Length: 322
Image (tube, rainbow, N blue to C red; front, top):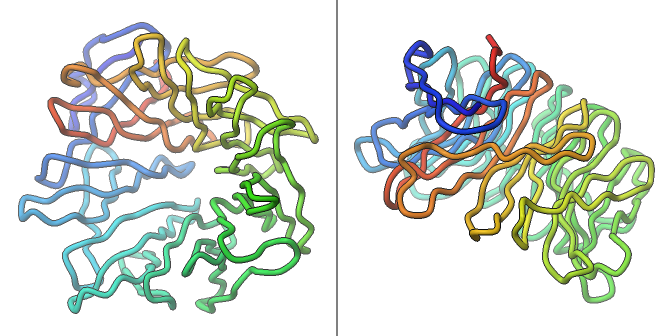
C-alpha cells in the first residue's frame, strides 16, 4: 500500500493507493515547491526548496524535519548528491550573483573552484564529478581536473561515480550520444543499446552496474539496466516513455515512466518487475511523480505534484520500514 505521512509526524499516515510503499510529503522551507534529489544510507535526504522569502535554498531533511543549508551569499542554492559520510555537493550563487559549486560538510558550505560549473555526484572517498563549460570534470582534495581524453571530449556528460572511481554519463560519437562507463584507469566502455542512436547513463553502483535511458526499438526513450555487458530494457507502466535516474547496490533502479493515461509516475524496478510508486493524493488534475535516488536500504526520494502547479519533495519507504 502507498500511504501519505505528514512532514512531521509519521503517526499521521493514511492509506492512499496500491503497492508496497508509503509516500511521505517532506514539505518545504516555506515556499510552494521543493524537490528531493539524494538520500544516503543513513536516511539523510537533500535537495532544494522554496522559502517564505521567495528564494530557493538547499535543504537537509532528517527525522521529520527540514533544515535550511543556506547559500554562498546569494538567494539560490540546490543540493544534488550526498555520500555516506554526510558530505553534500550542489551549486549556489554568491551575493554578486555568480554561481559556484559547493561542498557542504559538518554544517558548513564551502565554494569549490569553477565559475558556473555544476557538480553531479560525490562518492564515499570524497571525489566529486560534474561538468564545466560542457566538459566533464572531477574535484578531488579541492582541486579541479578536466577529464577529457581517453574517449571523452567536449560535450560529454558525467552523471555519477562509484567508490571505485568508475564514472558514467554520455559521450558524443558518430553524430549521436552514447551511454558509457569509464574506469579510473581511463578505459571507456560504450554501453549503447544496439540500434539506439541516443543513450545516457545516469547512475552506477559499487558493483559496476549502470542505469540510464536509451532509444528503444519502438523509437521512444526507455529506462535501462546494464550488468555484465548486457543491457536490459526496463519498459514502461503501459505508456511510451521511461527514464532511470538512481540505482543502489542491490540492483534496484528508480526513475519515472508514463502510464496508459499519459501521466508520469515514479517507479522502482528490481529483477524484472517495475512497481508504480504512486503520487501524493492532492496532485491536481494530472498527478505526477518522479523517483530520483534510492539508498542501500530501499528508501527512495524524488518529487510529486502537490496541488495545482506545485511540487513537493517526497520519500517513498517500504511498508513497515522504521
